Amino acid sequence: MPRGRIGRFQVMGLLQAARYYLLKGDLEKAKSFGLNRAIFYAWAKRSGGRPARRYAAGATAPSMPPAARNIEKLGNEAAYVSETGFFTIGDEVQRPEDYDRQIAQRIDAVVPYEEAWKAAVNYLKTFPKEVLLDQRQFYEKVYLPVRDHFEEVIKRYSKSGGLDELLS
Image 1 (cartoon, rainbow, N blue to C red):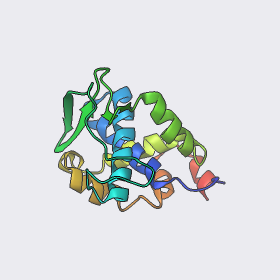
Image 2 (cartoon, rainbow, N blue to C red):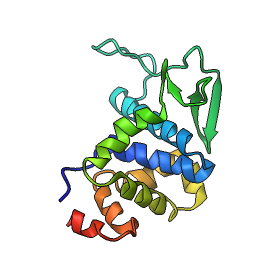
Image 3 (cartoon, rainbow, N blue to C red):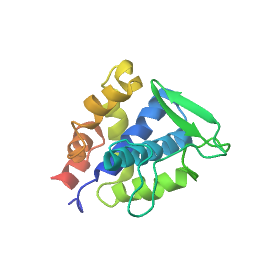
């Protein structure tokens, strides 16, 4: 039996990583991108997207870190890249091992991560490339419809057998 539900943050991170991987083919950078975008969207949701607003805890909006002078685009979505080549928000670099800890391990606590990854990639392959390249379309057509029941996507798209019993 599943041991809970996969959270929205993890679903966003997983789908963004799979999106980057399908479009660019680099798994390590895909993990960095997935975590970066999950953090960005979580921040945007909390702040309403207002960049100069301060919060009670003293946190400020994501900004360009001094070391990040490069911007990488994925379709019409842009993110800052550090000198190490990984994505960054503020002075925090999102490394592949951070993705593994914050996304993969938490998914693995519910369902095997490899099954979730395979399902995410297969699910994204059902969309036209134009949807994957467009930030708004990706959010509205890919993420929103499955964010609260990604386990159903896993059941449908993992195609490895055995998982149906786990999720029943």
